[in-house]
Each structure stands twice: as C-alpha cells, then as structure tokens.
Length: 160
Picture (spheres, rainbow, N blue to C red):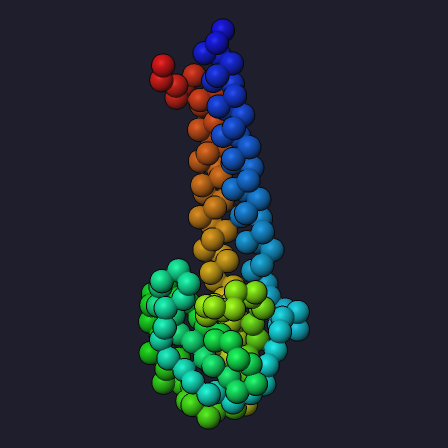
C-alpha cells in the first residue's frame, strides 16, 4: 500500500512537470511571429561594436549606440558573428528593435532586428528561430516526461 501511494505521488509529480514543460513550449510557440511595433525601437549611430561575454559567460556580438547607453547584443548558437562585424560599421546610422531588459550590468541579448537605411542587417527571423528551437525541444521533453509518468504509474517503469 505504501509503495502504491509513493508511486502515485511520483507519477502525479512527473505529470505536473510535463504540463509545466508543455506550457513553456506553448509560450515559445506564441513568440514565434514577432510584430516589431510591439518592441522598443531606437534610431541612432553606432558608437561601438564587437564581441563580448554576456552575463552567462558566453560570447555574443554587441552594439553600443549614442542615444542608448546599454549594450544590445545578439547570441547565436553557432557563435558565428563575422557577417555582423563586416556589415555594421562604427558611425553607421541604424535602427534597432529590441526587448527591454532590466539587467543593467550585462549585454541585453534580446536584440531583434537591425536596419540601416532600407537594408536589414539582422532579420527578426533569426530571433524567432531561437524560440522555434526552444519550442521543439520543450515539446519533445514534455511528451517524453508525460509518457514516463504514465509508464511509471502503470508499473512499466518502476524499480523498488
């Protein structure tokens, strides 16, 4: 009797965990199609650019603008930033779209799009792709945890 209650409680815990992971997947799904007018926009001149470490200690590309005194950055899983380094020059006039971040000490890596004149230097689709990857990973993880909770409850995956 005691083992069956323990097994049931563990199964309920895994079930709730799977719901939480699936909820994160849903949030990532809703953030896939970005409307730029819903985010902060700054038109300014590039004062500084380069590669630096963000608060997680990973390398990212950043911009420092004359009219905005926080570093805005882009993190790529591939860690390839040479195209941005080549396209964006110091003293270029750019328009950037970003999600405001309250962490004043580090680089805000929620830079969504960079435009220079009529040219898009960093497309919002790259930012949306990050959420798409997160959605697929969390969706897969949530389904696996849900299946494991069912198997655990049915004693197919239970060790004493």
